[in-house]
Amino acid sequence: MNDIVEKPRKIYVTRQIEFNAAHRLFNPELSDEENQQLYGKCSGKYGHGHNYLLEITLSGIIDRKTGYLFDLKELKKILEEEIVARFDHRHLNHEVNELAGHVPTTEILAVIVWEILDSRLKTITKQEVSLHEVIIHETGKNSVTYRGE
Ligand SMILES: Nc1nc2c(c(=O)[nH]1)N=C([C@H](O)[C@H](O)COP(=O)(O)OP(=O)(O)OP(=O)(O)O)CN2
Ligand SMILES: [Zn+2]
Image (cartoon, protein in one colour):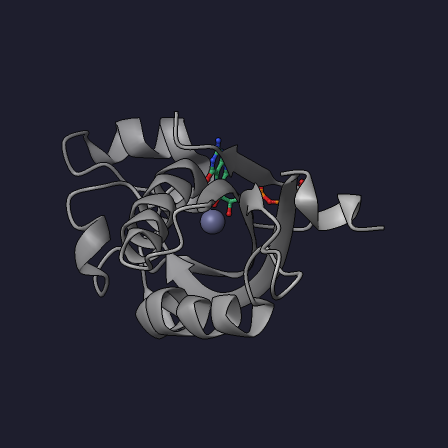
């Protein structure tokens, strides 16, 4: 039985969060016609909205004392502070500093979410835990995965 926590085992925990946001796929370095050709209806002048669903996965070794890799209540709090507070009910082209100068595609969003969470987790002294994966579902059919590479 003790073998369960005595042997260092790599394990993964995942927490989902949601936020709603508006965006417009538009590259200001291109003409209106080029944007229309590239992004179609997603480049519409007034933007459109999504209910984003994120899956954030941490990896590391189970703590012998707690039996946790990382307390999911604590992860929930971090995600509310770092992600929901920053992105929920925002217009991604205009209201999020980290996205300034970028076309707010799901790929760009996934990398920015990674950078934000990776920095925050590095302030926590539990070195056995690291960010493993960020998945963002932009629609029920479209999703992007980033693993920090
Ligand atoms: N590689 C990417 N392609 C697209 C992205 C993206 O972020 N990365 N984003 C979009 C748009 O944001 C768009 O709003 C997605 O819309 P759409 O493809 O129409 O979404 P659905 O899956 O819900 O559409 P169906 O019409 O039901 O297929 C576009 N491309
Ligand atoms: Zn969109």
